[in-house]
Structures are given as C-alpha cells and as structure tokens.
Image (tube, rainbow, N blue to C red):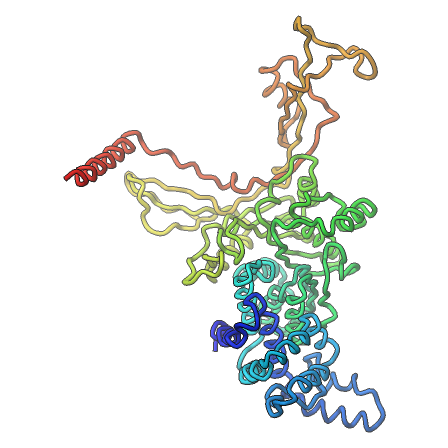
Length: 614
C-alpha cells in the first residue's frame, strides 16, 4: 500500500468523528492514534523479550529500566504493558482504563509524545461520546509494521495527514513540512563535495541539524541519502520544533529510527536555543516566510545588543515583519570552525532576503556579513508553485565556511525556475514538482561550478526548433538554421562577493536665499560652509569596485555643479538582484506584425457584430 492510499485509509477514520468533532479537530485524534499504532507495530517483535526481562529484574530486586532498553534493540523505547491495540479490543467495557495503562507502559520518551498531543483529553472525549472502542478498532486493523510500511513511507503518511488537516482548518501546511523533492535537492547540494562520507565502506560519523524540524522530513531524507551511498556512515540528527504536534511526530520518527531523542528539542529556536553550545557538520532549514517575530522580539534584541557578535544576531536584525533571516544568522552561529572541518548548510527563503532593506538596514548588514566573510556558495531560484502554502518564488541558499579553492570569493547563482513538471493533482498551492532529472541537472550545475545557459534554436519567424539544450562554458552551442537565430537564456552565473556590494552616498546641494545666494552656516563645524537644502538631497548607489569620486564627477557634477558628498552619511550595502542577472531582453514585435494582428482582430469584431444584427 503506498503512502497516499494508506493516508486515505487512515483518513476514513474521520467518518466516525463527524458530528462529535469539528473537521479542524480531526487531527487531535487521528495523528496520535497513528503514532500509537506505529509504535505498537514496531515494538511487537521485542515485546516478549522486554516483558521477560522486566519480570526477571523485578524478581531480583533490580531497577529494570537500563536492561529493558537493551532488550528493545536499537529502537530506543519499550513498553512494559502486556497489552497492545488488538488486545485492547478484547475488553470493550474497560477499554478506556486499559488504554491508559497501555500508554503508561511506554518509556518516558514515548509518553512525552502523547502528552504533547494532549492525548488523554481526547481519550476522555471519545469515551464520553461512545467512540473510543470504534476508533481503537479501526487503528488496530491497520498494518503499520516496518516490513509493510518503511520509515520513508511512514513519514510521507504523516505529512499527507497534516496537509489534509491544515487544508480543512485553514492552517498553513507549509509550516509543518517541505516538499520532498526540494529536500532531496538541498541534501544533494550539501553532500556533493564530501567524498569521505559518500565513499562506500567508510565508517564516518556526521551531525546534521534542523532548527525548524517540523515532522523531521529534512533530517530523514538526509539520512536516507547518506545510507544509500554509504551504509557504513552514520548521521546523528539534531533538531528543534515549536509546534507540539509536529514535534511529537518528529520525535516518534526519531525513536523508530534509533536516533537519540534527546537531540530533538521542543521550543522556539529564536528565543530559547535548545542546542546553545553545539556546532554541526551539516544543517537544513525551511523557516516560515513573512512571519513576524514580535513575540520573541525582546529576547532577540537583548541577545543582539548585549552579546553582539558573541551571540547569534551580531550582524543585524531584520524588520519585525519577517524573521526568516534570523534563522539564517542562527545557522551561521552553528557552523563548525573551518579548522575543525567546517560546515555547510542549506536554507529555503523567499525573495525578500535577497534585496529588502537599503544600505545600513538589518537585512543589508546580514547580507554584508555573509558575503564579506565569503560564506555564500550558491543561491538557487526554484520554480513558483512548489510549496503547499504559497505560490511565490523561493530560493535555496547554500552557505559554507569550507569552500574549495576555486569557489573562494565567488557566489554561484542558478536560475532553476524552469526546472519543473506539472503535477497530476495539485496539493494546495503546490502545482509543480521537480523530477529526478531536474534535481540531477541542478546538482551537476552546482558541482561543475561553471556558467551555463539554455540555448533554443529559432527559425526566421521566431518559432522554437526542438527542445532547449543546456550548454556550459566548455560546450559548443548548436548551430542556427539558415535564416534563424539562437536564443540564449542564462541558467548558471558566477559572481564575486563584492559584485553585490555598493556604497550609498548622500548628495547635497546648497540652500539659497531669495536672491539665489548660497546660505552659509554661522556656527560650529558648518561655520562659513554652504548649508544643505534638504529638499534637494539625493542618494546614489556606487558599486563597490568603482571609485566614488570618479563616479561623482562623471554622473553627478555635470548635472549639479554645486553638489557635494556628505561623507558622514555614506553607507555600504549589499543586495543580490537575482532576477536582474537572468533577465533576457525580448525585442518587441515589428510594427508590421502588430498592425496585421490588429487588422485581424478588427475583422473578427466586425464579423461578430454583423452576426448580431442579422
């Protein structure tokens, strides 16, 4: 059974809840019961050994807990109750009490999952409505054993259920998880240069961290990718998640995978860093877009002002209306020093962090910090309509403090907005998806670190001849047909860090009296100097690589000979005008072609009017 069929089967349980529960409340029952049944199935094989060990150690007067974990294998949890969901069905009259006893038999880490769901409140409500036995029966008959549903499929089931619950309750599904193909792309880009960890047979250990872990999808796919290339390698996972339900699902997933569940922390990453002293080899994040951080503003500002660069937010703070760049800084603070192996991370952001805020603003200062410290490896523009909750353009930033020699001082921009295929069925705002071929092409472009473009052969009338061809700097472009031409669309471009920097200069002009005479200052440092006319004040952005005085004399003085630069107001800024670098000029149609089209339209209108009057 695939994950979509399985999630549909589980969704059918909602039919039992209609009337007693609002649609927006279905998840409070179905999600924890799904996790309970999954743990029920996972622990089935080790249950006899755990119960036997419990009996033996209690008879010997010993604390059984340390021994029970070993008997449970590498799962990291156990259950000391002789019950499971199928056995609960044997005593319908006492199912409520027996279900409590069964859940209390789990080890502490698993019990915390159900506490996060406030599961006992739902048990009471189901029992009061006469639904508890019926719902338990439904789930007891679902086969969620690992042999039938592997961990990857189980993760997809959770995500599909959350998406459905988010849709019917008008919540934001994208806050909980990221499309799998986007994660696969990010994971490919993270690991592409780590030859040691990808080499089969090498028993290496790496750490990976997600500060916005959601249901754990990013961490899980990273582990699957690494295991596929090198089964001997181990990826130790860390994460933090604010939403209790997502945290509970992520924790359950980590338990089943044998990960240390204490590495998954609940809470707000920005105000209460759950891994305050930790550094990581790899990191991934899809923080919420356009979400204000007013609730944690005091804690964030205190850290910025009191700790400065010894804290996470030293470079600057973005506007309160969008906190996504705070997560960027948070990840930078978690990078392992380059002398200790360094780090690489990927983060999904919308377009605002590329250009929002002028010189001196928090956003500009953050861009300035990561670019001047040569941390940005690449930025990949994704297709629109890729995410479940938004159709806006999104970008994957790849940052590293262990750049290879040829990448040092450079940033690679990749326009992958055309790398998509239409989905057979839309999921919320998600109408497009990337194929494995698309992901492989983007990964190759990143790995080759070269400029590339799509070339389409056009005939004399501007009609495309065949599919576009991807051409890198080392390839020979196709030849245009007789009378035709080539249309070149850049896909990958390389820039130096300073290409994105500029100095904003303030241009002043003198204040003049009614007779047109320049007004001079009377005291202080302005005494005897022309006073500035604030109504004539202007600013100019001068590229970092250009001499400011030469620019001023060439661009300003010919138009305003009395102007001067207020040096005290000059500020350095950075922006990454992604779309401008991939803009391709489309020449307008000829006047003759437009005229012919207008004549054709006019003729159709006249014909239609004639039909109406007949």
